Image 1 (cartoon, rainbow, N blue to C red):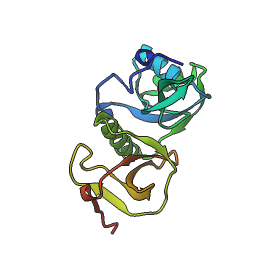
Image 2: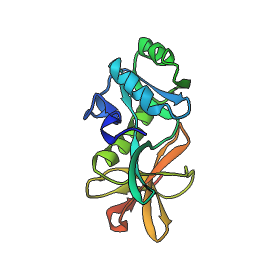
Image 3: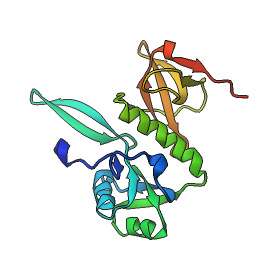
Length: 184
């Protein structure tokens, strides 16, 4: 387990919006438990990436252990050119690379996840939901995020989906901060 300071940054280069990355986006399906190691490899090669992570707190022998885990286990997103794609394949940390057909859609979906992380919201992996009410956050640090709203354990959660992966993350949200979007 890595010390908190040894974890790779969520984006490379750090503190940069993924909307500003230039190049083609790909999704890497990593070998088991290789997401962080691949992120470090990409940072060493100066390849732009996005590895959304979430904090998990567990207890072991009466001690509290804080871990930073990939939000979408087994996946990392990177942006670059064909040479970068080949460099990723040569790391021997990939199970495969998925071509992104709809680049703007993926960038928009990932930018929402990034905005939620940067705002300090506590994201949690969530089951992907195909149907439900599409809503938009109207105020606060998550303003303009769009997702599907569900009720879970007496709390309202906004589901942020990454359709290409068939995965999602959820964040707790107050119902007075959202509005339903007409899907016409």
